[in-house]
Amino acid sequence: MRSSWINKLSVILGPRPPVSWLLLCLISVLALIAVLGSSSSNSFESVTSIPVPDIYTNYRRLKEQAAIDYLELRTLSLGVSRQRELGLCGKELENYVPCYNVSANLLAGFKDGEEFDRHCELSRDGQRCLVRPPKDYKIPLRWPAGRDVIWSGNVKITKDQFLSSGSMTKRLMLLEENQIAFHSEDGLNFDGVKEYSRQIAEMIGLGSDSEFLQAGVRTVLDIGCGFGSFAAHLVSLKLMAVCIAEYEATGSQVQLALERGLPAMIGNFISRQLPYPSLSFDMVHCAQCGIIWDKRDGMFLIEVDRVLKPGGYFVLTSPTSKPRGSSSSTKKGSVLTPIEELTQRICWSLLAQQDETLIWQKTMDVHCYTSRKQGAVPLCKEEHDTQSYYQPLIPCISGTTSKRWIPIQNRSSVHPDDYFEDSEFWRSSLRNYWSLLTPLIFSDHPKRPGDEDPLPPFNMIRNVMDMNARYGGLNAAFLEAKRSVWVMNVVPTRTQNTLPLILYQGFAGVLHDWCEPFPTYPRTYDMLHANGLLSHLTSEGCNIMNLLLEMDRILRPEGWVVLSDNMVAIEKARALATQIRWEARVIDLQKGTDQRLLVCQKPFLKK
Image 1: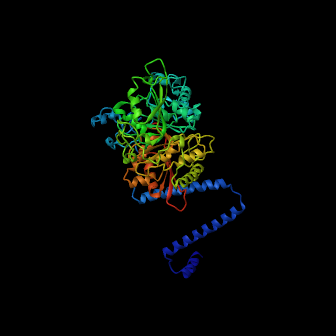
Image 2: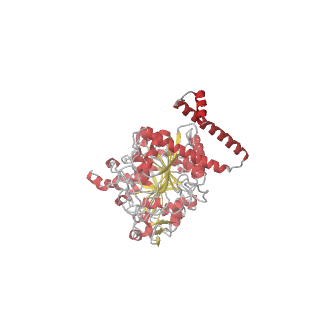
Image 3: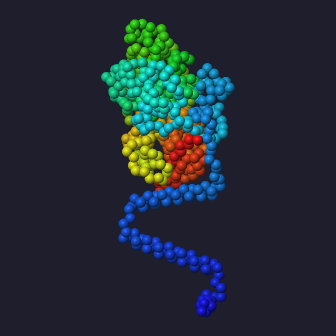
């Protein structure tokens, strides 16, 4: 019977069908089954109710996984071999800050204080490793609790250093063995920081410090900010106070301020200009900051004049400011004579002096400089105003020919043609980020990419850096969304210098060359964002792996990285991200383009 059936079949098909024909038949049958299955599935879905969110969530996960698989296949096709994960640096590098190697600077011949300055030209690429957190490191408390209480194991400072810090910290209190608390009234030689702030306001003719904004004071450069108490109070008044202080191996003021969620970066008055353009700040403040202002023929005071806006204020509080006499209103004293002479030469007027505090105001009249008597500080040539990235200090007055010579009391809105278009783009982008990242970033317990989490009732991100800020659109979008973050807006040096516009809006910002390390301590930012930076730096010949390692150094454990760029740049960054142990996923936000979003989270490595 069986042989008879085979004989009939052989008559129909021939004596022996070819293998290729049988394979084709098999594929046809499978295709038919798939079509029928899809049809029946569609028919079933038409009459069956299925929750839409589940379908969307599963589809989104499948799509993201497909993108990841595609990128891995693309990476392999490009011949990029999977590299081993990088190891951890030694314990001695837990607080490592590149470009500030005093021993190397001394060997290179720097002296007279320049050995403490920033010298990235001496830094060489050493062994690549990941800067580990200290053994007792803990994730900072959420803002605003983290402003007043920090973990002592997160900063390189001892209890003895705190307790011996003098009048600047005599109201500081250790709550427990592993916590440090800052009273809202700590900090200065007065009844408290609030009283000190009120005193400054009254000295410049205001009724209270709540009128700073009305008087044109929005941005303050706080030199040698101590533990950030004055800056913390100014932040509560809606002012932007940026702390700068010199590099310190232990007890760093900058590290403490950033740990409290306050804007800060390493910077000093030694031999180079600060990385800000001329006419940047409304007020410069120095309370016992340790700078001898009349040193080097007043070069440091001339640098303050460079970054101070017309009509801006210089506030100096120091025991040496108090005149030798019984009257606190005395304006003449032998100690102050050199400073007073210099301030007159640069068209500053002494508004008031009370106790140990003096306040000068920079002239609003640009013609003051041409009408000065012999011996006045000369005006800078126009080209000096265009270079302000760690250039040598110059003994001349800057900004007098700038279109931005506008007194702080007479602000006007001056924006480039594409400013509003840029702002609208970031409003839309932030909404997209928020809808995608809220379950991941802004939650009580950070989840790995792809995990689900309900919308959070609070914001766990505080210190944000926009590494390619352009006009500060992301910062503006954060403010409009009422998120309790502050943004360090970084303008790369080899791009259009838009930093004046960023500072004009009252935002924090700085110039920086991303081929070099950023002047901050490890673990000081919660989120790093960059749009188009990877492709730009690649075209400039910068090493992208070095950039990602630097980002890992300044990012806190469980912190986040959001990179937007073209597909080629994102592919490369994702491949490198695996080497530094970041969790990463790629997202296609703009359909039909090669733009991709790379979202990474830094793990909390405890070993």
